[in-house]
Length: 304
Image 1 (cartoon, helix red, strand yellow):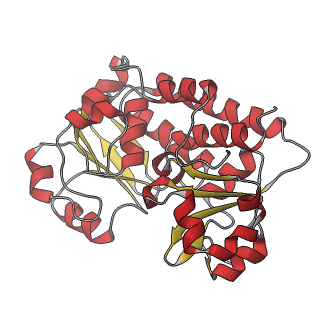
Image 2 (image 1 turned 135 degrees about the vertical axis):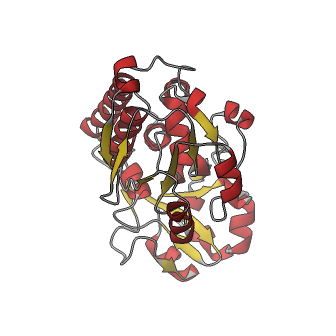
């Protein structure tokens, strides 16, 4: 039976995930640790540093993952309750959730840098922390290449540019290899990001890029908007070959078909090609999106 209620990881994907968990505490560049520098964040703000930060609070799970992948976990002084990867992040103090970080708790940690994201955090939090005099660096990756830029920026911030360059080079090479070995026939893939209402991943999104890199064709690419809302009949009309949905919906395949019985006519259902995917790996704009693309290739084209 090919219905999947959990993500199965192939050896090549596991190898990449081990790489992305970081190498513990990689060695920083001591010259860069002590030198003053400035770096422009994704809002176009020039942020100045007298030396490399030594205590960093990360308010976005994707940025926390990136710091650990760079081996900079010794610098991480605080994270949000949503930061759950890699597993050893559980030992880091929590400063609240994504939308309502505890500002007093952040101040008490004596952080010399707070990392925030545009999509994950709020303007209100940004303004409040700026008024408190906290040094902020904003990240807003909107593509797989944007993730590479974010890693490079964090490499500069943590005095680990060589580790960042190695990691970025390996991720770019993986994507290049996947794109160079594209199959002639691409199955139509539909990614549900919500079922109430029914919302799918459209064009110019991370998920669209993951589908393309993984050897699929986004069944919703011609629809207007990045995350269009659809009727249940519209999903039937799209008739995707493969249907993916995040595992944090806490829905099994049978639950989904029971909720929308007319979807039994969809090719993905008839051919038993429905998969619950790791929500954190697919939906966070961090380095694991490359592992998501590699995993999808093994699912869509197991023969390659």
